[in-house]
Amino acid sequence: MSKEPKATRSSKLCFPDHFVWGAATAAYQVEGASAADGKGLSVWDAFCQQPQKIFGGHSGEVACDTYHRFSDDIRLMKAIGLQAYRFSISWPRVLPKGVGQLNQKGIDFYSRLVDELLSAGITPYVTLFHWDYPYELYLAGGWLNPNSPDWFAEYSSKVVERLSDRVTNWMTINEPQAFIGLGHWEGTHAPGLKLPWNEVLIAAHHVLLAHGKSVLAIRASACQRVRVGIASVGSVKIPLSNSTEDIEAARKAMFAVTDYTFWNNSWFADPIFFKQYPEDGLRLYGSQIPSIRSGDMDIIAQPLDFYGANIYRGDFVRANQHNGYQLIDFPAGYPLTHFYWAVTPQALYWGPKFLYERYRTPIIITENGLSTPDWVAADNQVHDPQRIDFTSRYLSALRQAYMEGVDIRGYFHWSLMDNFEWAEGYRQRFGLIYVDFQTQKRILKESASWYKNVISSNGCSLPLFNTEGWIK
Image (tube, rainbow, N blue to C red):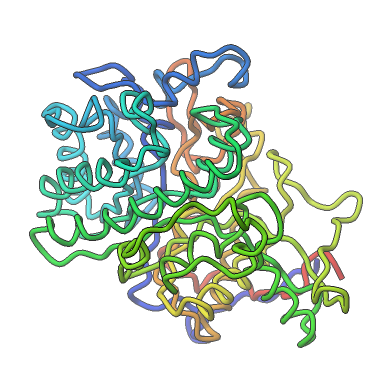
């Protein structure tokens, strides 16, 4: 791809003044202190104890030790120039059994974290559930238990009551597609179940009810006006060309439900915004659809202030007379990240564009980034040019979507620091900050300095977006 000219402030190719620049983490991936100060077990604590489930037998027992080192991490956030930090609450840290009495030491940790973030001029964005489900509740049936939505609502209320005097931005659940699909269908993530599809659909329905009840609980418990959203997988389809036919094919493919998987947008988003499951999914799953009680969809479809989309990649699509679209295989030698995910900057243009067209709700990119095989070089620096190039291209695409009328409110890079990457253990490094997991030493990567410049320019320093990319 040829080098494009750079935008300048005078060209007004910038994000809006209210745009929020941040980075993100999740509790189990960074906190460590897995049994400290009364914390209860999570399904991930238990899953990591099982042989051959996690690369190298790794676990989040120590992770980045941010439970003890968060002050140092906030100083690094400030050095990067972050305006916001997205982190999650560990449900079993504040409610060791999942319900019942609050663990004061657990909630005090998050209160101190919030206070120090605000003192540093960094706005907290809190996710209530990022996969570390309380093990005690899992033993009681977990997401299959019809009481699970109420358990989550109770937990939401208790956290919001304690933190909403300072926290105004909340997300209920992170990536239901992933922890249901990988954790309850494929069995590769905690809790490691391979349920029949009808039971997977029951668990998914309970998750949606939990989301809706959590939104109600957040608004009812908050002591000031808050903004509430969800952070969902953005499963993006990219038109192979800019033809009207290919664009329509990609739009159709992006919201289609065509197989027994949750790697789509509509099964979890349509109930939230339209009070119904998508028709093609209902036809496909037929009698396996769980019983939906009167009022369920009213609970699920609570108004949201923003829709969070976690977007890393996309698939190319072209028009096809058979069913309207055809997925295109990537050619040999196509650029891949260290996680073997295709590099598709166009995903951050078409993804937000299609999501906003369908759901008409402001978009926040709640995760975007890549894993690269970083190490400390001989000059004691961490050089990660691929991360810079990747993020530059993706952000340029996002800015183009905004310039064309998509209401985009913010961007959170995944991740703030290298961390425990679930079943991959510590072999995947997504961070702007390098972590030596033996010593817990942190080093700002070259990309962190680059990101600081992007933030200070409000995206004006980014190159122009190229709509075609590597596939012609």
